[in-house]
Image 1 (cartoon, rainbow, N blue to C red):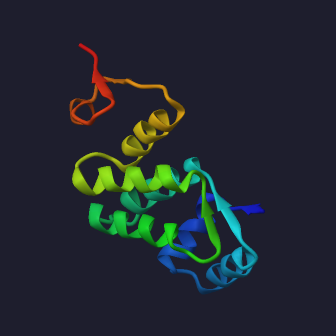
Image 2: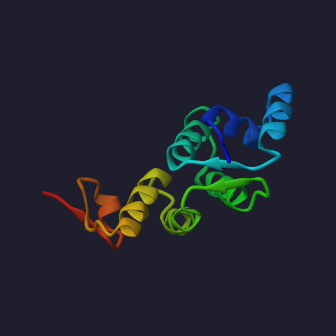
Length: 127
């Protein structure tokens, strides 16, 4: 299966360049894979460059999870991260994804200095 880069995924979500959108849609038509890293980078771009709200970011992840031609790496992990992010939108989605990736791998607790992240089950705040 093919894989996609951040800029391609951003084009699919933002739809702000018709030529690149068409090329991206053609590329993924046979199916494409989205890594956690590309997903996290994409959400960072949507937040930092396009000033999307946490609710819009959550909707973008939901759209990607249900996309007919995209397969997200460990979709169940992404879904769990999305649920955490929706419950605590003040956290970054990437923080939620890191925690859920560690949970799936059986490597908890997740050590952090982030007070907000440490409030989630499975994270441990270090002093």
